[in-house]
Length: 609
Image (cartoon, rainbow, N blue to C red; front, side, top):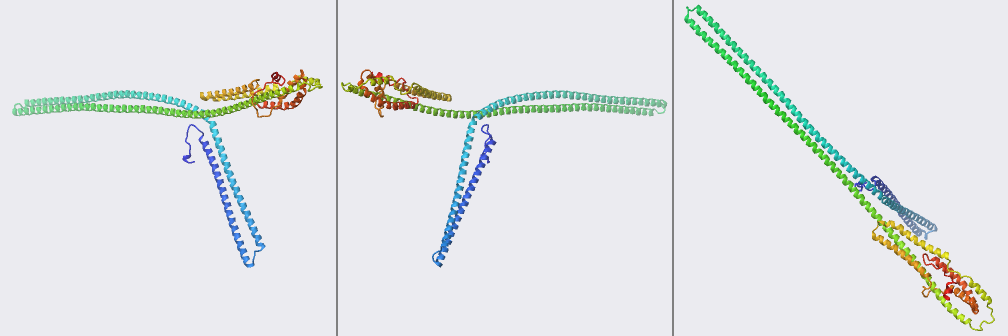
């Protein structure tokens, strides 16, 4: 399948693998049909080639035969019977081969056409089946799509709430963790600063104390050395002085000058020693001061180093705090980004679910609209059929009523005509001396007996009741059809419902008109006199003949032969007319009903009287 033929993935429709498998199967069938068609065409081409080859061979054989016949004719005269026989055999074989090739080619063509037609029919049938199954599954697909959309929306909302709650919990945990870490870092920094400050102070105090102790020791040592030197100088001076005094005393007399010189030398030596002792003491004092200054400088250097260390530690702590704050901000931003992403995913899921739901709703609306349209079409068709049936029944009933009314009018006219004729006959028979010597007693008794026998009705009461029941059943069937069509039309517009009710009222009015027409056909005295294209019916002859015979039985015996002749002629016509009237009554479906009480002996006698 090429990339352009691939189906897009969607939440509706059919399974993609099944559709692709079905399309692949159809394509394989099409390819096989194309291959079969190509084979058939190749066979046709081969047959055509064979046909052409055979035709060429036939032409070549004919040319050779013609040449041979020409050569033989030139050599021996007219061709012999053998050459003619060979030529006929070759021509017959060529014709047979050509006919066989043509028949084979036509068979192959017909087979290919039949295969192609059957394949097309099968493909159309399968496509129609697929379309029908797709239409039948549309409602189920719509419902499942709605359910999936609802479930997707619910799951998306639940997932969004869970993601939002998890993001909020994670953000709060991160904030608490960052705050705890920052507080712990600050406390640790404070503790470390305090510890380092205490250590630096203790170290500075120790260095200061040690420097002071060293300075004091050096100073005390210098002082002790100076005191020792002074004491030694003093002792030496005293010793020298004592020695000098001793020598002076020893040699006072001998060498006062030498004594003075020695005294001076001793004094000078004492001064020199004193000066040296003072210089040494001053040097020691200077060294002590230098040591104190160096100790002070070392203490200052320690203070500077401690300050530098404190500053570096504070800088490190600030950097750590900045890194912790940056990490906290980054984690907070990540939490916000994750929460925003979760909200975006939830929003996208909600949009997808809403789109799927909207699409499912649109598809359901389309299917419902198609169903309503089909229902409206079916209702319109059923209404049209019902109206046509009702109109046809009404027209048939009206025709039957009109035919019955025409028969009644015709019978009335015939009755009047026969009444006039009977009046003429009665006036003729009442002439005196016309039938003298004729005994009419037997005729009177026969006429009285015949008058006592009731005349035959057009239709019995049970038959008329059956006809009425069939008409009622037809009306009930029409009402049932309308009632069955009514639930289908519930989804239609109110105007269509009014049209349907108007159609039902029209059908009811038509049926009522048919009943009224039938009643009008039954009512005596409403018949209009009109000419009918049929031959005069003879059933009224029985009525008037019976009336005349009844009057003859009462005292007019002169009319008996005429009434007997009329009765004899009219009896046979009465049977035929009665059977025809029954057939016409039974043929009128839902038409007019004749009154069962309309008999020839009662109503006609009343009209005559």
